[in-house]
Length: 194
Image (cartoon, rainbow, N blue to C red; front, top):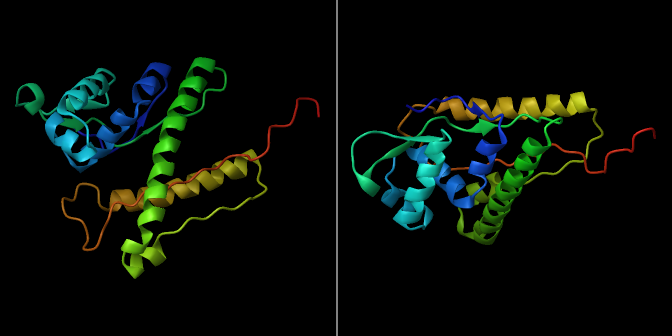
């Protein structure tokens, strides 16, 4: 059964299991509810065979599970959790590297979606064109202030996510909207002793 809470990942193997574009696309597709490999393939433009393989890999690491019923590629799959987090482990180089690899795959997906929107922006209604936006700020913050800012952003997005959790109907005019937010230093870290 899907757990509405996010899963906290603490091992490099689970992160490596996610670090594939097809697996990330499958997890995203399953946000709409259970799907067979064939249904998922139609949504993400992959073959049922490819989807079946990657669903089994995601199940191996506890990201998805079979709902029961069906056979072969006609077996429905569902998420075990909605979302994940991978808190930093500065003293664990294997975990840190796995986070970096996953972050690169996620960034590639996000940038591709932003580009698709920029290219398609004129085809959206004036209301959507006005509502969609990007914003960049360079702020001078401490590490604690940076963590506070990130927590405030997460609180706002969580409020919108949970507002519709468990509902099968979306408000009229709703579209899937990706929020992309990064909080990171733009300069190299100072050298020790300077």
